[in-house]
Length: 416
Ligand SMILES: Cc1cc2nc3c(=O)[nH]c(=O)nc-3n(C[C@H](O)[C@H](O)[C@H](O)COP(=O)(O)OP(=O)(O)OC[C@H]3O[C@@H](n4cnc5c(N)ncnc54)[C@H](O)[C@@H]3O)c2cc1C
Image (cartoon, rainbow, N blue to C red; front, side):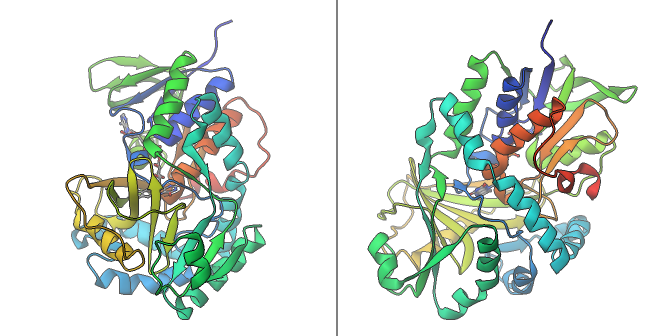
């Protein structure tokens, strides 16, 4: 008997993890992407395996901060005003999802996705002989003053409810474990049991190489159309002119996924939440862990290629030119807390990537409502590295009819 076949659109962390878990579930797989594995949004993230981030991106405290952020064109959140009318339905839905009852339900759903993140990562990285890319190291959040620390008490309490406790460190204790941090720091919140990856692109490329070793095909092409007949997806029309026949299809196309889903009748609110990074191979700063700084949502992570400063959230659509001044703003921000940080030099790189953002900070994981042989895995926003492998495992379970241990209803495609 021949194996069932699955075609996956998208070779980011989500699509490649899905391919790898579908192989384990007995599928032959083909992954199609217009760029090589790990060169979309998954290329440049902050590397945090952030399963303890259970509180959604938009919640009441953040809602109050948004007007102030929007006043600063290089602040952590920006909207290109000409783009606002297009993004308005998304923002209205995000506002509704910031209400306390919704935040509670979304938090529970996010926590359930986090339960097996480490095990799922280990499954894939061990098999790919790339386990060394996953670094087991506690993380540290830094504060300028007591008001900043107190403002996050509610979020820390919610995390604690889900088993993710933090410990307050004095300025001296912070500098004991991270001497590069400014003596002017007020205090820190220490999260134990954390992981980060030392090269996000290499993570995806290593798993992709394993998928190929196990008989999978990775095809470089652009999917321009999904052809359907009698409620099934039958073929993909590719930019090269080729037609690719389908048995089952999984859409893991990151920030472009809604464009494909829409053609199948599934309406999804998805916006590109454009993030930036700066990598300084000669940073002058030695950190042993990934740190975040409460003044602005961003992380500084020691990676194989240098110190990566990553963050920022820009709503400007898929195609607008990057504004690399936003990457420079990350440098200015971290310079306050890492005084030894050197000026960017000729080895410094800047990057922009499109996070696939839903207005409820939850991904879409599950079948199409209208087309019987299509599944979705996208919309992971700020958490795609973290939830990518688990999404792949869950899709493997769903597509083989295995019952999942967690309630997947919060991730349905027809919730928008
Ligand atoms: C600055 C920044 C920091 C971040 N930090 C973290 C972090 O610390 N931890 C964390 O968990 N997450 C983080 N994220 C989020 C994370 O990187 C994303 O959620 C994740 O990469 C999304 O993965 P993906 O596979 O869905 O999308 P992608 O990696 O973008 O992959 C989708 C792929 O689909 C392809 N594609 C789309 N349409 C088509 C088509 N029609 N035909 C062919 N190919 C197509 C694209 O070329 C792309 O390669 C961060 C993101 C940014 C920008």
